[in-house]
Image 1 (tube, rainbow over the protein chains, first blue to last red):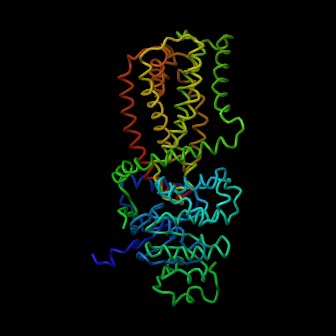
Image 2 (tube, rainbow over the protein chains, first blue to last red):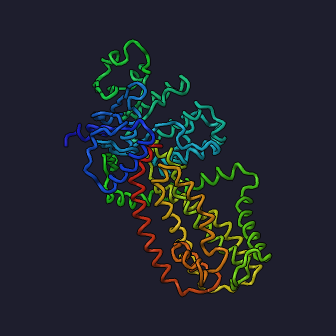
Image 3 (tube, rainbow over the protein chains, first blue to last red):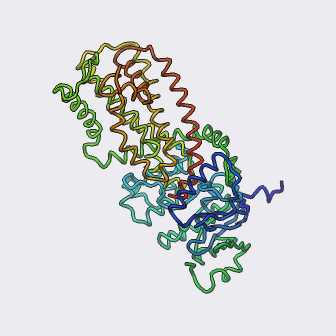
Length: 257
Length: 277
């Protein structure tokens, strides 16, 4: 294996994913899908059943250590679906995704936070859910709290936090986890400008040792940290190996909605 | 680079799930404990008299049945030990079963939103749920020990075998609960049916009366899986009778196998449940 191949952290090969628009049908398909998962079946999964549509169609890309891929697209283009497949949370309908190493994922900032417990208690719970060990969390907690700028409030219940404070704590935990793959879903859109700047700097810093995939529909965010862009559209995806064609994706607009 | 490689494709074989369960068991213990303590802290921090709510229900049930029995509204045949002690013991055992039955679906419902955002070992959820069942039972166990001081019950060495009975009761509830979880997560009807059935199921189980020897109740009890486990455990606990311990061990091993099979089914279902969450 060459050095370059060794550096591949995420390898997504021809991923497709279908969903059902109709709830009742979706539940019925849920039962048949679970049964076919258990017993294995030769059903043609590439065929759409009534009320189904492709949320992702034939998406392929690789991300290496030290690289940052931005996933851009309008609402409903399948961005979050793609991230969930990479994290192993949901299954692709066809294709394969391979991720090597520890994954620090932030699909939602408050995920796992209990509003009644203090910031410190949540830090331990969240850290362990992400996969950190207790000694690791103990060793890093001061630096997590300092980065989140929450020294004075860390022992207050999280429900007294502003959305920006919660976002800071969530971001700080995920980035201190020393992941080999960092996945961020629109999380940089919240928080104040100053913390956003600090976050971009942090991502640049940890990018040296890991691969980053982040979802954004804001042009300036993509320009700030991405090396390449995956543009998702209905039934279609395009991979741009640089940022030269950013204007082609976003047009004159600053955001994609 | 880290040794962990996550390959996600359309189908994961049951065998791969089994390997994952054993792999996750070690890492899930500490996380399971963390989730358990988090949920308990969050539950009691918002209550002023906290633990009081765990003590009152079993006392009320006991008082109710003692009243029904004393006033001859319900006629219970001789239990061989003071009736309050009998009811307290039996409802303790029934509670372990009922709580374990509700545990898999309840915990999965609670944690599915989190599982849909972060990939973490789902084994920790079941571990935390089991710890919560025992936490609720510990308080009732304290009441039981108190009852021993008030009512003269002769204790025997068979008390040492009681943990086997308690674990088997938990496993029985959790196995039935696990069986219903995948379909129950898709259709809420299942959860409603369980809640509707539990009171009838309790009456169809020799909880507030001894195991019947004749009549319709014997037929019902023959098909009721809770009856043998509950009766044998009660025999060990208050009657000093260990003659059916072999049967209990056989039930335990069968349940252990079934639990593992059903857990693989649940693991296979989780991605599909998340999609529909």
